[in-house]
Image: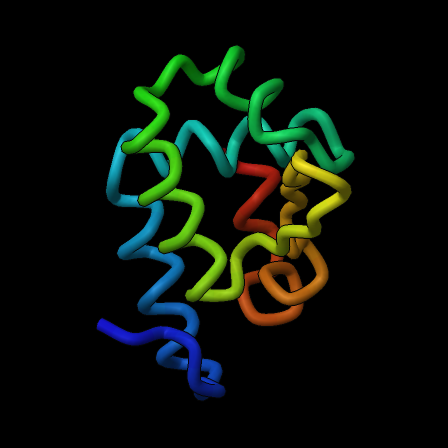
Length: 97
């Protein structure tokens, strides 16, 4: 699946539920929501304890759907939850995680 194209609200909702159906991605989204700020990938990995290659896969999937955004600073990547987009299309979802 290629998620990089602009997607309709209904399709975005379906993809959010697809992403949250995986326990690893669910842990990542919960962690980012509860800390309420961006996290470095290494810090995030320490909290969710997922294998590094699996973490990369999950982060790419979440980024391509539009659930998270990433930014690079030097050699470090930082991840943040796209709460505004999620809340605009699925109000209250994140507070129930």
